[in-house]
Amino acid sequence: MNQVDSISILAMRDTGPAPEAAITRDLVKHGLIAAPVLIGGSAAIWGANGALSCGYGIVIVLANFTIAALLVTRAARISYALMMAATLFGYIFRLALVSAAIFFVRNLSWVELLPLGLTIIISHIGLLFWELRYVSLTLAFPGLKPKLKNSQSTFSTQDESTVKS
Image 1 (tube, rainbow, N blue to C red):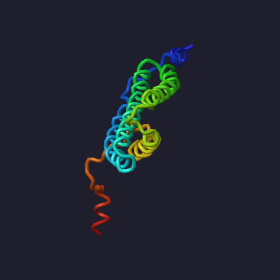
Image 2: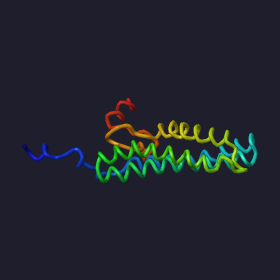
Image 3: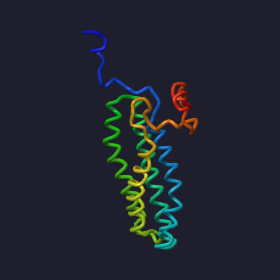
Image 4: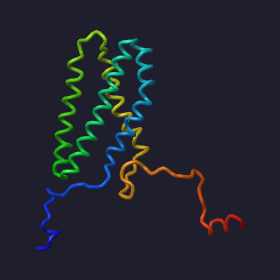
């Protein structure tokens, strides 16, 4: 048995950069950009309580994404098996946190449940779809797509000679 065969999958871990942390930072940035629009729309429809509920919902969503990235990033540094467990049980834990965050404020005077629930659902889905435009799904650039340094396309010398003639 050689050394490669003796390595346990439970002992493998990630020592490279954490693309999930970069994606989450970008996702939170987009959430903060969308927040004034969502809060303004809620204020227009449900008034001040709707705006407060919407703001609270946005905080819940951004905290949920941040906790998810933190759990995966930290667990991957230890082992892939722990990362899988953190992903599975972290989802259940985060679902319980979101439920508790709603449960403990549901009877307060400033809470409007409809804008709170709509904000949580729409922002989770909307931010994930918005982020799809910026995520690179290749192994060459895991995480966010690399940004082009020059917006103008450059031709090779062979292409330039073809264009000139």
